Image (cartoon, rainbow, N blue to C red; front, top):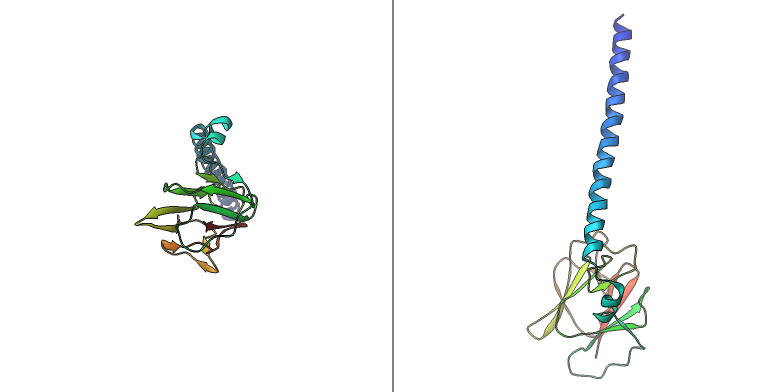
Length: 163
């Protein structure tokens, strides 16, 4: 009798545990779907996005000595061969459509890194991404000075400042 009762309690406990798992999955999926819907609602239409700040297709030129960088040149990944004109505004890099430069890279986070201009110099910082942002071979742990020719890597996408 006691064995049968224990067996019944274990069966009901197992069923309850399975239901908790299903409910937990439903909550996570619902949250992800609502976040994706919010992000897509903030994304400009394709026409207005192209009119904003999309990288222009061109071959990177050899930089001259002196002067401040004028472009962010993409040297590897899906955006290789493109460059973005620098105008002093912060550049947000990531997979999200509301980033300044949306990356088509499965190793990039939605909001992966930020490049910004301060006191006459460009800096890069990782925004707590999962896979990290690399300056050369070093993973960023804080904002770092970004000079022309220094290679930045986010997943399979590489870029550098050029003049």
